[in-house]
Length: 170
Image (tube, rainbow, N blue to C red):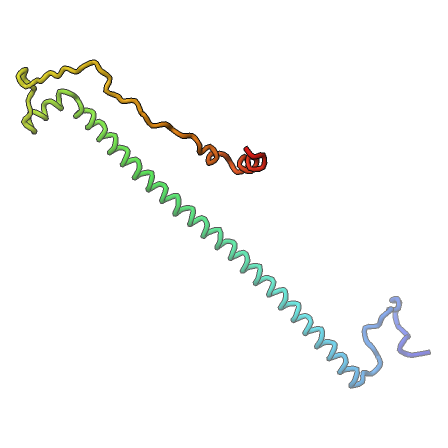
C-alpha cells in the first residue's frame, strides 16, 4: 500500500488533495508560468476594454449634456429677444395711440379753422369773392367709337383645350 494515500484520524478522504506530491520539472514550471502570464495579459486586456467602455460612456453622457445645455441657452436667447421685441412693440403701440389721439383732437373743424387763421393768415370768403358758374344740362361724356375685337380667345384657353382645338380643327 502507498504511504501517501493513508490518512490518519477519522475525517473522510479528500477527493482532490491540496498538495501534489510529485516533483515538478522545470518544463512544468515554465508552462505554468506561461499560462499564468497569458491569463494575466488576458485579464489586463479585459480590464482595458472595460475602462475604455466606461470612458466612452462618460464622454457620450457629457456630449449629450453639453448638447442639451447649448439648446437651452439658444432657447433662452430667443426668448429674451422675443421679450425685448414685445417691449419695443408695446412702446411703439403706446406712442402710436398717443399720436392718433393727438391727430383726432387736431382734426376738429374749429381747431383747423383756428390754426388756418392764426398760422396761415387765412380768412373766410366774402360774398364778393364768390363766383357762381352755370352749366348746361348736357352730357359731356362721349361714347367710344372703337370696335373691340375679341379674336384672342385662343390665348386665354389652357394648353389642353388648344390641343383639342387643333385636333378637331376648331
